[in-house]
Length: 535
Image (tube, rainbow, N blue to C red):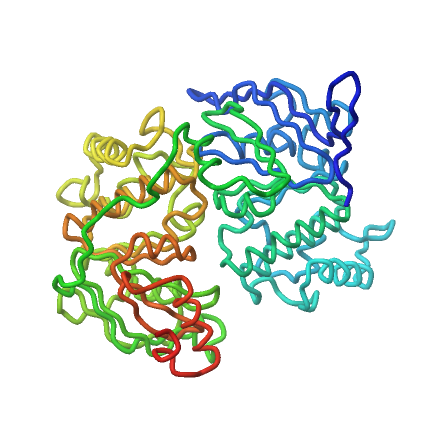
Protein backbone atom coordinates (compact mmCIF):
# COMPACT_ATOMS: atom_id res chain seq x y z
CA UNK A 1 0.00 0.00 0.00
CA UNK A 2 1.22 3.43 -0.92
CA UNK A 3 0.67 4.91 2.54
CA UNK A 4 0.74 8.63 3.29
CA UNK A 5 4.21 9.68 4.45
CA UNK A 6 4.46 11.61 7.67
CA UNK A 7 7.73 13.45 8.28
CA UNK A 8 8.38 15.14 11.58
CA UNK A 9 10.18 18.38 10.74
CA UNK A 10 10.29 21.40 12.98
CA UNK A 11 7.51 19.94 15.11
CA UNK A 12 5.09 19.83 12.14
CA UNK A 13 3.58 16.73 10.51
CA UNK A 14 3.96 17.00 6.74
CA UNK A 15 1.76 14.52 4.88
CA UNK A 16 2.12 13.48 1.26
CA UNK A 17 -0.90 15.15 -0.32
CA UNK A 18 -1.91 14.22 -3.84
CA UNK A 19 -4.55 16.98 -3.80
CA UNK A 20 -5.15 20.32 -2.12
CA UNK A 21 -8.19 22.46 -2.85
CA UNK A 22 -7.85 25.87 -1.25
CA UNK A 23 -10.52 28.53 -0.66
CA UNK A 24 -12.84 27.20 -3.37
CA UNK A 25 -15.87 29.47 -3.83
CA UNK A 26 -18.66 28.91 -6.36
CA UNK A 27 -21.81 31.03 -6.66
CA UNK A 28 -24.99 30.35 -8.61
CA UNK A 29 -27.78 32.93 -9.03
CA UNK A 30 -29.15 33.45 -5.54
CA UNK A 31 -27.06 30.65 -3.99
CA UNK A 32 -23.46 30.42 -2.75
CA UNK A 33 -22.84 26.70 -3.30
CA UNK A 34 -19.24 26.74 -2.01
CA UNK A 35 -17.82 29.27 0.41
CA UNK A 36 -14.03 29.11 0.83
CA UNK A 37 -13.95 25.32 0.98
CA UNK A 38 -10.65 23.57 1.75
CA UNK A 39 -9.88 19.91 1.11
CA UNK A 40 -6.62 17.97 1.49
CA UNK A 41 -6.37 14.39 0.30
CA UNK A 42 -3.43 12.16 1.22
CA UNK A 43 -1.90 9.97 -1.46
CA UNK A 44 -2.89 6.30 -1.37
CA UNK A 45 -5.93 6.76 0.89
CA UNK A 46 -9.71 6.64 0.67
CA UNK A 47 -11.11 10.05 1.56
CA UNK A 48 -14.84 10.41 2.26
CA UNK A 49 -16.74 13.62 1.59
CA UNK A 50 -19.97 13.83 3.60
CA UNK A 51 -22.66 16.38 4.34
CA UNK A 52 -26.35 17.05 4.00
CA UNK A 53 -27.91 17.53 0.58
CA UNK A 54 -26.96 20.96 -0.68
CA UNK A 55 -23.77 21.01 1.39
CA UNK A 56 -21.71 21.36 -1.80
CA UNK A 57 -20.08 17.92 -2.13
CA UNK A 58 -20.92 17.24 -5.77
CA UNK A 59 -20.26 20.87 -6.72
CA UNK A 60 -16.77 20.64 -5.21
CA UNK A 61 -16.03 17.50 -7.22
CA UNK A 62 -17.32 19.16 -10.40
CA UNK A 63 -14.80 21.93 -9.77
CA UNK A 64 -12.03 19.37 -9.28
CA UNK A 65 -12.87 17.39 -12.42
CA UNK A 66 -13.25 20.44 -14.69
CA UNK A 67 -17.00 20.06 -15.22
CA UNK A 68 -17.15 23.50 -13.62
CA UNK A 69 -14.24 25.07 -15.54
CA UNK A 70 -11.48 27.30 -14.27
CA UNK A 71 -12.75 30.85 -14.20
CA UNK A 72 -16.25 29.90 -13.06
CA UNK A 73 -15.03 29.62 -9.45
CA UNK A 74 -12.36 31.19 -7.27
CA UNK A 75 -9.66 29.38 -5.33
CA UNK A 76 -6.85 26.97 -6.17
CA UNK A 77 -6.52 23.30 -7.15
CA UNK A 78 -3.06 21.87 -6.41
CA UNK A 79 -2.59 18.35 -7.77
CA UNK A 80 0.74 16.57 -7.41
CA UNK A 81 2.25 19.85 -6.15
CA UNK A 82 1.22 21.78 -9.28
CA UNK A 83 -1.58 24.31 -9.55
CA UNK A 84 -4.10 23.17 -12.17
CA UNK A 85 -6.56 25.14 -14.29
CA UNK A 86 -8.94 22.53 -15.71
CA UNK A 87 -11.12 23.93 -18.49
CA UNK A 88 -13.03 20.68 -19.06
CA UNK A 89 -13.19 17.07 -17.91
CA UNK A 90 -10.63 15.95 -20.51
CA UNK A 91 -8.01 18.19 -18.89
CA UNK A 92 -8.40 16.45 -15.52
CA UNK A 93 -8.59 12.96 -17.05
CA UNK A 94 -5.27 13.49 -18.84
CA UNK A 95 -3.68 13.82 -15.38
CA UNK A 96 -5.43 10.71 -14.05
CA UNK A 97 -8.38 12.33 -12.23
CA UNK A 98 -11.53 10.39 -13.15
CA UNK A 99 -15.04 10.98 -11.79
CA UNK A 100 -17.87 8.43 -11.73
CA UNK A 101 -21.23 10.12 -11.30
CA UNK A 102 -24.25 8.84 -9.39
CA UNK A 103 -26.14 8.58 -12.68
CA UNK A 104 -24.08 6.10 -14.70
CA UNK A 105 -22.90 7.47 -18.05
CA UNK A 106 -23.27 4.26 -20.05
CA UNK A 107 -25.07 3.68 -23.34
CA UNK A 108 -27.43 0.69 -22.90
CA UNK A 109 -27.40 -0.38 -26.56
CA UNK A 110 -23.58 -0.50 -26.81
CA UNK A 111 -21.30 -3.29 -25.63
CA UNK A 112 -19.15 -3.16 -22.51
CA UNK A 113 -16.04 -2.63 -24.64
CA UNK A 114 -17.66 0.15 -26.69
CA UNK A 115 -18.76 1.91 -23.51
CA UNK A 116 -15.39 1.48 -21.85
CA UNK A 117 -13.52 3.32 -24.60
CA UNK A 118 -16.25 5.71 -25.75
CA UNK A 119 -14.47 9.01 -26.41
CA UNK A 120 -11.17 7.28 -25.68
CA UNK A 121 -11.13 4.89 -28.64
CA UNK A 122 -8.22 2.55 -29.41
CA UNK A 123 -7.56 3.63 -32.98
CA UNK A 124 -4.66 3.67 -35.45
CA UNK A 125 -3.14 6.77 -37.04
CA UNK A 126 -5.94 6.89 -39.61
CA UNK A 127 -8.60 6.88 -36.92
CA UNK A 128 -9.70 3.30 -37.58
CA UNK A 129 -10.69 1.49 -34.39
CA UNK A 130 -8.55 -1.52 -33.52
CA UNK A 131 -11.26 -3.85 -32.23
CA UNK A 132 -8.83 -6.62 -31.26
CA UNK A 133 -6.90 -4.22 -29.05
CA UNK A 134 -10.17 -2.71 -27.73
CA UNK A 135 -11.61 -6.04 -26.61
CA UNK A 136 -8.30 -7.28 -25.17
CA UNK A 137 -7.86 -4.18 -23.02
CA UNK A 138 -11.53 -4.25 -22.05
CA UNK A 139 -11.21 -7.88 -20.94
CA UNK A 140 -8.10 -7.06 -18.90
CA UNK A 141 -9.90 -4.20 -17.12
CA UNK A 142 -12.98 -6.35 -16.48
CA UNK A 143 -10.78 -8.91 -14.74
CA UNK A 144 -9.41 -6.19 -12.46
CA UNK A 145 -12.92 -5.41 -11.18
CA UNK A 146 -13.95 -9.06 -10.97
CA UNK A 147 -16.40 -9.16 -13.88
CA UNK A 148 -16.57 -12.37 -15.91
CA UNK A 149 -18.88 -11.01 -18.61
CA UNK A 150 -17.71 -10.92 -22.22
CA UNK A 151 -16.65 -7.48 -23.44
CA UNK A 152 -19.22 -8.01 -26.23
CA UNK A 153 -22.11 -8.04 -23.73
CA UNK A 154 -24.58 -5.18 -24.11
CA UNK A 155 -24.85 -2.87 -21.11
CA UNK A 156 -28.64 -3.27 -21.03
CA UNK A 157 -28.17 -7.01 -20.41
CA UNK A 158 -26.32 -6.64 -17.10
CA UNK A 159 -27.62 -5.42 -13.74
CA UNK A 160 -26.99 -2.09 -12.04
CA UNK A 161 -24.27 -3.49 -9.76
CA UNK A 162 -22.30 -4.82 -12.71
CA UNK A 163 -22.80 -1.56 -14.60
CA UNK A 164 -21.19 0.24 -11.67
CA UNK A 165 -18.20 -2.10 -11.99
CA UNK A 166 -18.02 -1.36 -15.73
CA UNK A 167 -17.78 2.34 -14.84
CA UNK A 168 -14.83 1.57 -12.56
CA UNK A 169 -13.22 -0.56 -15.28
CA UNK A 170 -13.74 2.37 -17.65
CA UNK A 171 -11.90 4.61 -15.18
CA UNK A 172 -9.03 2.11 -15.01
CA UNK A 173 -8.73 2.31 -18.80
CA UNK A 174 -7.89 6.00 -18.37
CA UNK A 175 -4.90 5.25 -16.11
CA UNK A 176 -6.68 6.69 -13.09
CA UNK A 177 -4.59 8.00 -10.20
CA UNK A 178 -7.35 9.81 -8.28
CA UNK A 179 -10.78 8.18 -8.53
CA UNK A 180 -13.87 10.19 -7.52
CA UNK A 181 -17.06 8.23 -6.84
CA UNK A 182 -20.33 10.11 -6.28
CA UNK A 183 -22.83 7.88 -4.44
CA UNK A 184 -21.39 4.68 -5.98
CA UNK A 185 -23.56 2.33 -3.91
CA UNK A 186 -26.86 4.24 -3.95
CA UNK A 187 -28.50 1.68 -6.26
CA UNK A 188 -26.72 -1.41 -4.89
CA UNK A 189 -27.76 -3.92 -2.27
CA UNK A 190 -25.61 -4.52 0.80
CA UNK A 191 -23.65 -7.43 -0.68
CA UNK A 192 -22.79 -5.57 -3.90
CA UNK A 193 -21.96 -2.43 -1.92
CA UNK A 194 -19.48 -4.25 0.29
CA UNK A 195 -17.88 -5.87 -2.74
CA UNK A 196 -17.37 -2.44 -4.32
CA UNK A 197 -15.91 -0.95 -1.13
CA UNK A 198 -13.56 -3.91 -0.73
CA UNK A 199 -12.42 -3.29 -4.29
CA UNK A 200 -11.57 0.32 -3.42
CA UNK A 201 -9.57 -0.93 -0.44
CA UNK A 202 -7.65 -3.32 -2.71
CA UNK A 203 -6.97 -0.47 -5.17
CA UNK A 204 -5.66 1.58 -2.24
CA UNK A 205 -3.14 -1.16 -1.48
CA UNK A 206 -1.90 -0.79 -5.05
CA UNK A 207 -1.41 2.97 -4.57
CA UNK A 208 -4.65 4.44 -5.94
CA UNK A 209 -6.28 7.37 -4.17
CA UNK A 210 -10.08 7.60 -3.98
CA UNK A 211 -12.59 10.26 -2.96
CA UNK A 212 -16.01 8.84 -2.14
CA UNK A 213 -19.24 10.79 -1.66
CA UNK A 214 -21.90 8.75 0.09
CA UNK A 215 -24.83 9.14 2.44
CA UNK A 216 -24.41 5.59 3.74
CA UNK A 217 -22.40 6.45 6.82
CA UNK A 218 -21.70 2.83 7.76
CA UNK A 219 -19.74 2.62 4.48
CA UNK A 220 -17.77 5.72 5.43
CA UNK A 221 -16.81 4.20 8.77
CA UNK A 222 -15.85 0.96 7.04
CA UNK A 223 -13.57 2.15 4.24
CA UNK A 224 -12.53 5.79 4.65
CA UNK A 225 -9.17 6.81 6.12
CA UNK A 226 -10.21 10.45 6.45
CA UNK A 227 -13.65 12.09 6.46
CA UNK A 228 -14.24 15.72 5.46
CA UNK A 229 -17.57 17.19 6.54
CA UNK A 230 -19.22 19.98 4.55
CA UNK A 231 -22.19 21.98 5.81
CA UNK A 232 -23.97 24.76 3.89
CA UNK A 233 -21.10 25.09 1.42
CA UNK A 234 -18.33 25.39 3.99
CA UNK A 235 -15.73 23.01 5.44
CA UNK A 236 -16.61 21.99 9.00
CA UNK A 237 -13.88 19.49 9.85
CA UNK A 238 -11.77 16.57 8.67
CA UNK A 239 -11.94 13.49 10.90
CA UNK A 240 -9.11 10.97 11.11
CA UNK A 241 -10.57 7.49 10.62
CA UNK A 242 -7.34 5.60 9.94
CA UNK A 243 -8.23 3.18 12.73
CA UNK A 244 -11.82 2.84 11.37
CA UNK A 245 -13.34 3.47 14.79
CA UNK A 246 -15.36 6.61 14.00
CA UNK A 247 -19.06 5.76 14.35
CA UNK A 248 -22.07 7.07 12.45
CA UNK A 249 -23.28 9.25 15.34
CA UNK A 250 -19.97 11.15 15.33
CA UNK A 251 -20.23 11.81 11.59
CA UNK A 252 -23.88 12.88 11.85
CA UNK A 253 -23.02 15.38 14.57
CA UNK A 254 -20.56 17.04 12.21
CA UNK A 255 -23.06 17.02 9.33
CA UNK A 256 -26.10 18.46 11.10
CA UNK A 257 -24.44 20.25 14.01
CA UNK A 258 -26.18 18.13 16.61
CA UNK A 259 -26.75 14.53 17.61
CA UNK A 260 -29.57 12.72 15.82
CA UNK A 261 -30.81 10.33 18.48
CA UNK A 262 -33.71 8.78 16.54
CA UNK A 263 -33.43 8.09 12.82
CA UNK A 264 -37.15 7.31 12.39
CA UNK A 265 -40.02 9.52 13.61
CA UNK A 266 -42.49 7.85 15.94
CA UNK A 267 -45.84 6.63 14.59
CA UNK A 268 -48.53 4.31 15.86
CA UNK A 269 -48.29 1.13 13.80
CA UNK A 270 -51.52 -0.01 12.11
CA UNK A 271 -52.32 -3.22 10.27
CA UNK A 272 -56.09 -3.41 10.65
CA UNK A 273 -57.52 -0.71 8.37
CA UNK A 274 -59.72 -1.26 5.33
CA UNK A 275 -57.95 -2.80 2.33
CA UNK A 276 -57.37 0.01 -0.17
CA UNK A 277 -55.15 -1.75 -2.70
CA UNK A 278 -54.95 -5.45 -3.52
CA UNK A 279 -53.10 -7.45 -6.16
CA UNK A 280 -53.84 -11.08 -7.00
CA UNK A 281 -51.75 -13.47 -9.10
CA UNK A 282 -49.85 -10.72 -10.93
CA UNK A 283 -47.49 -11.74 -13.75
CA UNK A 284 -45.14 -9.65 -15.90
CA UNK A 285 -42.78 -10.57 -18.74
CA UNK A 286 -39.71 -8.64 -19.87
CA UNK A 287 -40.55 -5.88 -22.39
CA UNK A 288 -37.89 -7.06 -24.89
CA UNK A 289 -37.21 -10.70 -24.04
CA UNK A 290 -40.84 -11.76 -24.02
CA UNK A 291 -40.01 -15.30 -22.86
CA UNK A 292 -38.39 -13.98 -19.65
CA UNK A 293 -40.77 -13.71 -16.70
CA UNK A 294 -39.78 -10.99 -14.23
CA UNK A 295 -42.81 -11.12 -11.89
CA UNK A 296 -44.33 -14.50 -11.12
CA UNK A 297 -47.84 -14.88 -9.68
CA UNK A 298 -47.44 -12.21 -7.00
CA UNK A 299 -50.25 -11.33 -4.57
CA UNK A 300 -50.35 -8.74 -1.77
CA UNK A 301 -52.60 -6.16 -0.11
CA UNK A 302 -52.25 -2.74 1.49
CA UNK A 303 -54.58 -1.23 4.10
CA UNK A 304 -55.53 2.35 4.73
CA UNK A 305 -53.15 4.11 7.11
CA UNK A 306 -50.26 1.63 6.87
CA UNK A 307 -46.80 1.56 5.33
CA UNK A 308 -46.03 -1.72 3.59
CA UNK A 309 -42.42 -2.44 2.68
CA UNK A 310 -40.97 -4.49 -0.16
CA UNK A 311 -37.55 -6.01 0.38
CA UNK A 312 -35.30 -8.00 -1.94
CA UNK A 313 -31.93 -8.11 -3.66
CA UNK A 314 -31.15 -6.53 -7.02
CA UNK A 315 -33.20 -8.28 -9.70
CA UNK A 316 -35.91 -9.35 -7.24
CA UNK A 317 -38.55 -7.73 -9.47
CA UNK A 318 -39.82 -5.11 -7.03
CA UNK A 319 -39.52 -2.10 -9.35
CA UNK A 320 -40.83 -4.11 -12.30
CA UNK A 321 -43.84 -5.12 -10.21
CA UNK A 322 -44.64 -1.57 -9.10
CA UNK A 323 -44.19 -0.03 -12.54
CA UNK A 324 -46.39 -2.67 -14.17
CA UNK A 325 -49.13 -2.00 -11.59
CA UNK A 326 -48.94 1.70 -12.39
CA UNK A 327 -50.79 1.53 -15.69
CA UNK A 328 -48.57 -1.07 -17.38
CA UNK A 329 -45.59 1.32 -17.28
CA UNK A 330 -43.22 -1.65 -17.57
CA UNK A 331 -43.31 -5.08 -19.15
CA UNK A 332 -45.24 -7.14 -21.67
CA UNK A 333 -47.89 -9.86 -21.42
CA UNK A 334 -49.08 -8.49 -18.08
CA UNK A 335 -51.93 -10.34 -16.41
CA UNK A 336 -53.51 -10.72 -12.98
CA UNK A 337 -56.03 -8.80 -10.90
CA UNK A 338 -55.72 -5.31 -9.41
CA UNK A 339 -58.24 -3.85 -6.92
CA UNK A 340 -58.58 -0.29 -5.62
CA UNK A 341 -60.99 0.16 -2.69
CA UNK A 342 -62.52 -3.20 -3.48
CA UNK A 343 -63.19 -2.41 -7.14
CA UNK A 344 -61.44 -4.46 -9.80
CA UNK A 345 -59.64 -2.11 -12.20
CA UNK A 346 -57.77 -2.48 -15.46
CA UNK A 347 -55.24 0.33 -15.70
CA UNK A 348 -54.05 0.68 -19.28
CA UNK A 349 -51.87 3.76 -18.82
CA UNK A 350 -50.21 5.97 -16.22
CA UNK A 351 -53.07 8.44 -16.72
CA UNK A 352 -55.56 5.68 -15.84
CA UNK A 353 -53.57 4.91 -12.70
CA UNK A 354 -53.51 8.56 -11.61
CA UNK A 355 -57.25 8.93 -12.23
CA UNK A 356 -57.90 5.86 -10.06
CA UNK A 357 -55.86 7.24 -7.15
CA UNK A 358 -52.43 5.64 -7.65
CA UNK A 359 -49.15 7.56 -7.45
CA UNK A 360 -45.75 6.13 -8.36
CA UNK A 361 -42.67 7.94 -7.06
CA UNK A 362 -39.91 6.54 -9.26
CA UNK A 363 -36.47 5.51 -7.98
CA UNK A 364 -34.94 7.56 -10.83
CA UNK A 365 -36.07 11.10 -10.07
CA UNK A 366 -33.66 12.77 -12.50
CA UNK A 367 -34.60 10.85 -15.63
CA UNK A 368 -38.16 9.65 -15.04
CA UNK A 369 -39.57 11.71 -12.17
CA UNK A 370 -38.82 15.36 -12.86
CA UNK A 371 -38.07 17.74 -15.70
CA UNK A 372 -34.80 19.15 -14.36
CA UNK A 373 -34.67 21.98 -16.90
CA UNK A 374 -38.08 23.25 -15.75
CA UNK A 375 -39.21 25.09 -12.63
CA UNK A 376 -40.41 23.74 -9.31
CA UNK A 377 -43.73 25.37 -10.09
CA UNK A 378 -44.28 23.41 -13.29
CA UNK A 379 -42.94 20.12 -11.90
CA UNK A 380 -45.37 20.34 -8.98
CA UNK A 381 -48.52 20.39 -11.12
CA UNK A 382 -47.58 18.52 -14.28
CA UNK A 383 -48.91 15.08 -13.19
CA UNK A 384 -52.46 16.48 -12.90
CA UNK A 385 -52.47 19.73 -14.82
CA UNK A 386 -56.27 19.81 -15.08
CA UNK A 387 -56.45 20.81 -11.42
CA UNK A 388 -55.01 24.24 -12.29
CA UNK A 389 -56.54 24.58 -15.76
CA UNK A 390 -59.80 26.15 -16.89
CA UNK A 391 -62.99 24.09 -17.12
CA UNK A 392 -62.03 22.95 -20.61
CA UNK A 393 -58.63 21.73 -19.43
CA UNK A 394 -56.85 23.88 -21.98
CA UNK A 395 -55.58 27.10 -20.37
CA UNK A 396 -53.46 26.85 -17.21
CA UNK A 397 -54.16 29.37 -14.48
CA UNK A 398 -50.58 30.27 -13.54
CA UNK A 399 -51.72 31.86 -10.29
CA UNK A 400 -53.26 28.54 -9.17
CA UNK A 401 -50.15 26.72 -10.38
CA UNK A 402 -47.87 28.95 -8.33
CA UNK A 403 -50.13 28.75 -5.28
CA UNK A 404 -49.95 24.95 -5.42
CA UNK A 405 -46.16 25.04 -5.79
CA UNK A 406 -45.78 27.48 -2.88
CA UNK A 407 -47.99 25.27 -0.71
CA UNK A 408 -45.93 22.12 -1.31
CA UNK A 409 -42.59 23.91 -1.03
CA UNK A 410 -43.71 25.13 2.39
CA UNK A 411 -45.19 21.78 3.43
CA UNK A 412 -42.08 19.87 2.32
CA UNK A 413 -39.66 22.47 3.72
CA UNK A 414 -37.92 22.53 0.34
CA UNK A 415 -34.82 24.70 0.34
CA UNK A 416 -35.03 26.96 -2.70
CA UNK A 417 -34.76 30.69 -3.46
CA UNK A 418 -38.17 30.51 -5.19
CA UNK A 419 -40.65 28.24 -6.94
CA UNK A 420 -39.24 29.52 -10.23
CA UNK A 421 -35.88 27.86 -9.60
CA UNK A 422 -35.05 25.14 -12.13
CA UNK A 423 -35.40 21.79 -10.38
CA UNK A 424 -32.02 20.66 -11.68
CA UNK A 425 -30.34 23.34 -9.56
CA UNK A 426 -31.62 21.81 -6.32
CA UNK A 427 -29.81 19.26 -4.18
CA UNK A 428 -30.89 15.62 -4.38
CA UNK A 429 -32.91 15.79 -1.17
CA UNK A 430 -34.79 18.88 -2.29
CA UNK A 431 -35.44 17.34 -5.71
CA UNK A 432 -36.97 14.37 -3.88
CA UNK A 433 -39.24 16.71 -1.95
CA UNK A 434 -40.42 18.31 -5.21
CA UNK A 435 -41.11 14.83 -6.59
CA UNK A 436 -43.16 13.90 -3.52
CA UNK A 437 -45.02 17.20 -3.74
CA UNK A 438 -45.80 16.51 -7.40
CA UNK A 439 -47.55 13.26 -6.50
CA UNK A 440 -49.24 14.58 -3.37
CA UNK A 441 -50.78 17.24 -5.63
CA UNK A 442 -52.61 14.45 -7.50
CA UNK A 443 -54.41 13.51 -4.23
CA UNK A 444 -53.91 9.74 -4.51
CA UNK A 445 -55.25 7.00 -2.26
CA UNK A 446 -52.15 4.84 -2.67
CA UNK A 447 -48.52 6.03 -2.82
CA UNK A 448 -45.93 3.71 -4.31
CA UNK A 449 -42.54 4.98 -3.16
CA UNK A 450 -39.63 3.31 -4.97
CA UNK A 451 -36.35 3.96 -3.09
CA UNK A 452 -37.72 7.27 -1.70
CA UNK A 453 -34.53 8.20 0.17
CA UNK A 454 -31.92 7.06 -2.36
CA UNK A 455 -28.93 9.40 -2.45
CA UNK A 456 -30.07 11.79 0.27
CA UNK A 457 -28.60 12.55 3.68
CA UNK A 458 -29.80 11.52 7.14
CA UNK A 459 -31.41 14.88 7.88
CA UNK A 460 -33.37 14.93 4.61
CA UNK A 461 -34.28 11.27 5.15
CA UNK A 462 -35.86 12.13 8.49
CA UNK A 463 -37.91 14.85 6.80
CA UNK A 464 -39.06 12.40 4.10
CA UNK A 465 -40.00 9.85 6.79
CA UNK A 466 -42.03 12.52 8.57
CA UNK A 467 -43.88 13.28 5.33
CA UNK A 468 -44.62 9.55 4.86
CA UNK A 469 -46.03 9.40 8.39
CA UNK A 470 -48.22 12.40 7.62
CA UNK A 471 -49.52 10.61 4.52
CA UNK A 472 -50.68 7.58 6.46
CA UNK A 473 -52.09 9.73 9.27
CA UNK A 474 -54.22 11.33 6.55
CA UNK A 475 -55.56 7.86 5.73
CA UNK A 476 -53.40 7.16 2.69
CA UNK A 477 -51.83 3.78 1.98
CA UNK A 478 -48.08 3.72 1.33
CA UNK A 479 -45.96 1.07 -0.39
CA UNK A 480 -42.22 1.52 0.22
CA UNK A 481 -39.64 -0.27 -1.91
CA UNK A 482 -36.20 0.03 -0.36
CA UNK A 483 -32.81 -1.65 -0.55
CA UNK A 484 -32.02 -0.45 2.98
CA UNK A 485 -33.32 -2.99 5.49
CA UNK A 486 -33.00 -0.66 8.52
CA UNK A 487 -35.24 1.80 6.70
CA UNK A 488 -37.94 -0.82 6.11
CA UNK A 489 -37.72 -2.03 9.70
CA UNK A 490 -37.88 1.53 11.01
CA UNK A 491 -40.80 2.72 8.90
CA UNK A 492 -43.06 -0.16 7.88
CA UNK A 493 -46.02 -1.94 9.47
CA UNK A 494 -45.57 -5.06 7.33
CA UNK A 495 -42.79 -6.19 5.00
CA UNK A 496 -43.08 -8.40 1.93
CA UNK A 497 -39.94 -10.17 0.70
CA UNK A 498 -39.34 -10.84 -3.00
CA UNK A 499 -36.67 -12.84 -4.79
CA UNK A 500 -36.23 -13.47 -8.52
CA UNK A 501 -39.75 -12.28 -9.33
CA UNK A 502 -41.45 -14.38 -6.66
CA UNK A 503 -43.14 -13.38 -3.43
CA UNK A 504 -41.16 -15.22 -0.77
CA UNK A 505 -42.88 -14.36 2.50
CA UNK A 506 -44.50 -11.64 4.60
CA UNK A 507 -43.47 -10.30 8.01
CA UNK A 508 -45.21 -8.17 10.57
CA UNK A 509 -42.63 -5.45 11.21
CA UNK A 510 -42.47 -6.14 14.95
CA UNK A 511 -41.37 -9.71 14.20
CA UNK A 512 -38.92 -8.89 11.40
CA UNK A 513 -35.15 -8.54 11.60
CA UNK A 514 -32.47 -8.08 8.96
CA UNK A 515 -31.32 -11.64 9.60
CA UNK A 516 -34.80 -13.10 9.11
CA UNK A 517 -35.32 -11.18 5.86
CA UNK A 518 -31.98 -12.32 4.45
CA UNK A 519 -32.63 -15.87 5.60
CA UNK A 520 -35.95 -15.81 3.74
CA UNK A 521 -34.20 -14.72 0.54
CA UNK A 522 -31.47 -17.35 0.85
CA UNK A 523 -34.03 -20.01 1.71
CA UNK A 524 -35.97 -19.23 -1.46
CA UNK A 525 -32.75 -19.59 -3.46
CA UNK A 526 -32.37 -23.08 -2.00
CA UNK A 527 -36.06 -23.86 -2.66
CA UNK A 528 -36.74 -24.92 0.94
CA UNK A 529 -39.69 -24.12 3.16
CA UNK A 530 -39.21 -20.41 3.81
CA UNK A 531 -41.64 -20.16 6.72
CA UNK A 532 -39.83 -22.95 8.55
CA UNK A 533 -36.43 -21.42 7.81
CA UNK A 534 -37.14 -17.95 9.17
CA UNK A 535 -38.78 -18.99 12.44
